[in-house]
Image 1 (tube, one colour):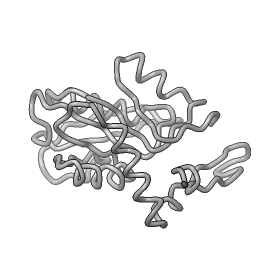
Image 2: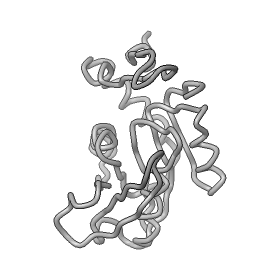
Image 3: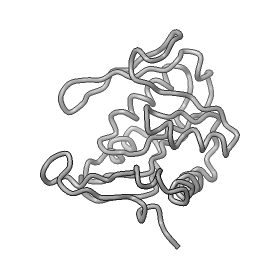
Length: 176
């Protein structure tokens, strides 16, 4: 029986020398691989009490929306600044070289709602931490953070867990 990692393509030295790029397009391009990825992500949510799934742009949409559909939960978008049409709340976070800003509609999370944040990959954890802050600004709480892949050498899990967040991932790769 195949595992999710069997569908992930590794590309050495991309985008630069020494990096092992983990390509999820091969998961998405295979119907069984994609179904397995969604099923494995859903298993990680067993026993977690939550009301809403929120996905980070853009690959968080790819995995979060099918989970929300399967689990009969609403799906909320976390987008790059300037992409949402209604009143928003925003959070700036650090990148390797500079900063970025993400935002959510102000009415997308109701006070007291428990939210699962979904993205394809956890590396340093900066984007998803900013997403958690948005949810908390709106009065919600983060029930869990869920990822298909984890690059454990970048210690995103360690940083997020040190702030009290629950982190779940399906496939864990050592290194960067």
